Image: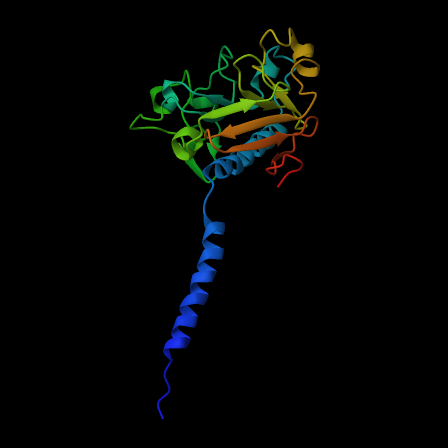
Amino acid sequence: MKKAFTMIELVFVIVIIGILTAVILPNTKTNPVKEAAIQLVSHIRYTQHLAMIDDKFNINDSNWYKKRWQIVFTKGSMANKKYAYTIYSDAAGGNTGDPNISEIAKNPENREQLLTGGATGGEPELGYNDPDFLGMKKLNLGMSYGITNVIFSSSCSVGNSERLAFDHVGRPLKGKLGSSLGGGNAQAYENDNLIQTDCLITLTDDDINVIIKVVHETGYTCVMKEDGTACI
């Protein structure tokens, strides 16, 4: 006798599939703001890594401290007026504070790409919309993830300078290196620029906020839980 499914059995299977779909699908929905935060945490850690393996101290160079590796956020025309970030060492002549092609870190996974989503004050090839763009478009948080604002807490915000740098042991520093904030070689290194309390960086798309914490002293970086009590 040939066996076959009954109508009741088929309906039962369909119901089970429907229940599983209702349970599983919501958990597979992406959160662009959290994805942007996870990516940014990875790149902040990479900036710290570069700073620790590439100590810029030079007893014969009074501007050595301006050349530390840093990550800076911009929202200018070169970034299509969206929030983007760049990882660089301000080592070229003049220490302008703005990155150029020779100063920007290369993507360790593709040495042909630079770690920028659009760099203010740089060459045309550092512009997000340039046909010969040398950067990585996913580093433009506004274009790739819909981020509308990047907010630094008061512990690491200096005027309109949204950036972090690291010293040779990985300690995070705030502000534009070599600016009037420090007022000199030793001061800029030891006092004013060092972050004294944890730095909180909030990414938002106007509806969802995700907070990144950079721990002072150690520079440990992580994405915070939604209740803000701990790292994920």
